[in-house]
Amino acid sequence: MFLSYVNSAIAYANTSNLLVRKLNTTNVIAKNFHPQGDATSYKNDILSQLNTSLALVPSTDSSVLAGYQAVYEATANQLITSKSGQVELLLALTGTQLGTNTISVQAALQRPFR
Image (cartoon, rainbow, N blue to C red; front, side, top):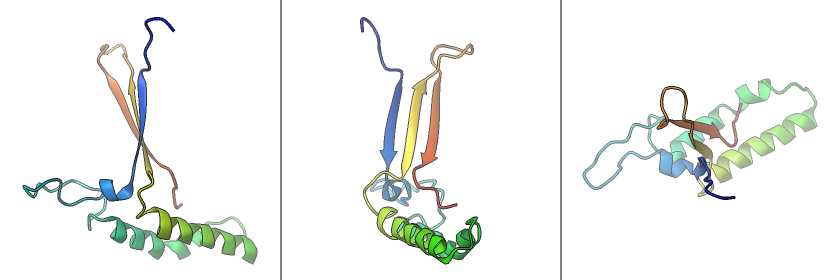
């Protein structure tokens, strides 16, 4: 490929990096999407919603519900506070008609709970 470039990038951020209270030693407070500002509190909030999520499963079979619960709990307990990327960040140069120096920023949960 001659004189070409990739106009996009993908990053995966873990929950612990996104849910922080202090950004640096000068105590600058981050704007975060969880009021407690930490991954453990976020995990506990997710786990408290298990029964609500189970009610949304389109099955009444006890083995299906048990499987859903097992996956839900394993994901919440093991992945939210891990170093694996829970949020996908997509960055792209779009070059729309508004100008050539425009970018697109998108975020997506890798493991939604509902």
